[in-house]
Image (cartoon, rainbow, N blue to C red; front, side, top):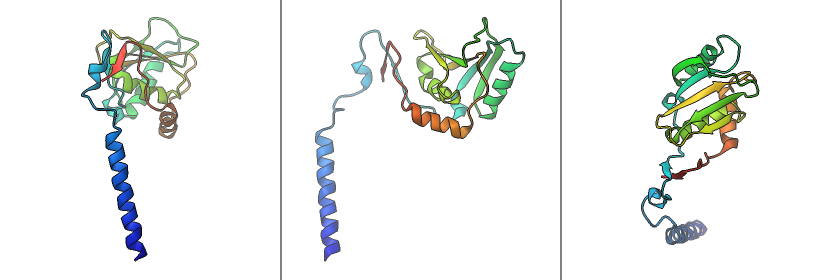
Length: 169
């Protein structure tokens, strides 16, 4: 008898919770793209499901020969799609890494931040139209994070933030 009473109370509580949730839903209108201010670019803040979805270019901004090839090999071992591997136009001795990306690569850049344990500079370009993230390796680079460190870093970083000139859509 007590078991039936407990199940009945749980059922009533569940019904009340559903009714309250539905009545207080703030997503009453259509897409978020309609809420964008004029001139803002709608973007997705979703993280890629797998590293194999991320396209990168690797640039060596140090005077250490072959560093871009070594880092690109590490990224390939982690299943990233590596396109360009070359020296950067200028050295960056004070940086671990610089991530350059556009509106289509916000989630990818956020995940890449975790591979540098959030010790990378981010350079967002609103005008950029490709899906690539340029990874510029600087003079303070030591190594990429291990998969465990990367996952912990993603958890600490949380959800990607909207860059200036964008809206979630």
